Amino acid sequence: MCKVLVLPGDGIGPEIIAEAVKVLAVLNEKSVIDVSIDNGLVGGAAYDAHGHPLPEETLVKARDCDAILLGAVGGKQWESLDIAVRPEKGLLGLRAELELFANLRPALLYPQLADASSLKPELVAGLDLMIVRELTGGIYFGQPRGIRTLDNGEREGFNTLVYSESEIVRIGRVAFATAQRRGGRLCSVDKANVLECTELWREIMSSLASDYPDVRLSHMYVDNAAMQLVREPKQFDVMVTTNMFGDILSDCAAMLTGSIGMLPSASLDAKGKGMYEPIHGSAPDIAGQGIANPLATILSVAMMLRHSLDNEAAAVSIEKAINAVLDDGLRTSDIMSSGMTQVFTSEMGDAVVAKLA
Ligand code: NAD
Image 1 (cartoon, rainbow, N blue to C red):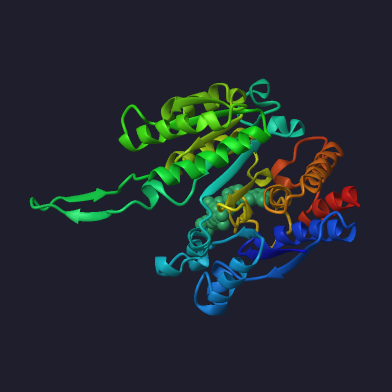
Image 2 (cartoon, rainbow, N blue to C red):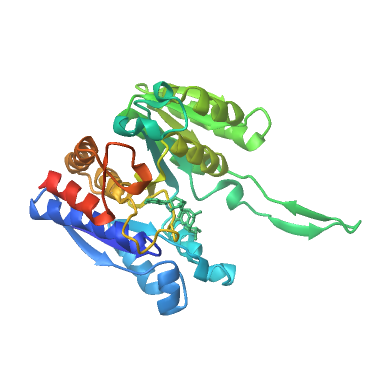
C-alpha cells in the first residue's frame, strides 16, 4: 500500500483537493490503486493552528509518505506576517527539506479548449510540452546574497548564480529520462554566451547525452527560447533549464494554454518521491464559492500515479476521464465558452469520478 499525504492548504485549496480525493477514492474502490490517505496542515491554515506554516508534525508526515498532494497556500490575511512565517514559507520549506529539486511542469492544451489561448488556435492546437525546471539551486539560493552599502554611500543589491556539477547532472538525468518517456527530444535552455555558470550547464548536458542515445539533445539561449515559445511552441517536446529561467519560461508556457485551472505540476526528489500540486495559487477572490476548477489538481493526481506510485495505467485513465468530461461540454467558469454547460467545482469532480466508475 502507498501512503499519500494530502495538504489542502488555503483559499480554494480545500475545495479542489476534495475533488482530487474523490478520484483517489474511486480508484481505490475499483482496486486500480492501493493508496492510504493521511491529512496535514500547511500554509496559512497551519499558521493559524500552530503558529508556523510548516509544523513539525506535517514535516514528519511528509518525510514518511510516498507522495504529497497539495492544494495551494496563501491569502491576504497572512500577508502582513513576518516573512519567515508567511504561508509560502511552508511550501518552500517542504521543497527544501525533502530536496524536491526537479520541477516538472507540463503545458498541454486540450483541443476542446483551444479557444482559451491568446495565441492563434493553429499555433497551439495539440500543444504538449514539458518544462523540467531545477528547483532547489541556482540564483534563488546562491550565496552570497543581500543588499549592502558601498563606501560611497550607494546601496548595491547582489545575488549569486551557482550550480555544482552534481546539481546539473541530477536535473539533467531527470530531463533525459522524461524525454525518453515522451517524444525523445530535449532542449536545454541556458545563457552560455554570457554566464559561465550556464556554460558549465551546457557542457554537462552535452556530456550526459551519450547515456541517452534515443534522445535528441539541442541547446538554446534563454532569450531565444522565450521568443520561440510564443512563435512556434509546438517545436518543443521537453525543455530543461535553471531555477530562474524555468520560473519565467514555465509561466509563459502555461499561459499558452490559456487556462491556469488546467495545469498540474510535480516536484521530485532523487528517488522519484514527489509533491504534486496545481500550478495556480489559492485564488482568494473565488474561495468559498464552489466555482474553482478542480481539474489541475485532479491532473496532479495523474502525475503522482505516473511519477511516484508507478501506475501509468491509472494515470492514463484519469486523463482520459477528463478528456471525456470536456467532450461532454462541461466547463467550470474559468474555461466556460458559449454552448457549453457551466458546472460547479464538485459537479466537475463528480463527472470525472462517474467516467472512472
Ligand atoms: P492565483 O493563481 O491564486 O489566481 C490568479 C487568478 O486565477 C485569479 O483570478 C483566480 O481566481 C484564478 N484561478 C486560479 N486558480 C483557479 C482555479 N482552479 N479555477 C478558477 N480560477 C482560478 O494567483 P494570485 O491571485 O496571484 O495569488 C493568490 C494567492 O495564492 C497569494 O497568496 C499567492 O501568494 C498564492 N500563491 C500560491 C501558490 C501555491 O500555493 N503554489 C502559487 C501561486 C500563488
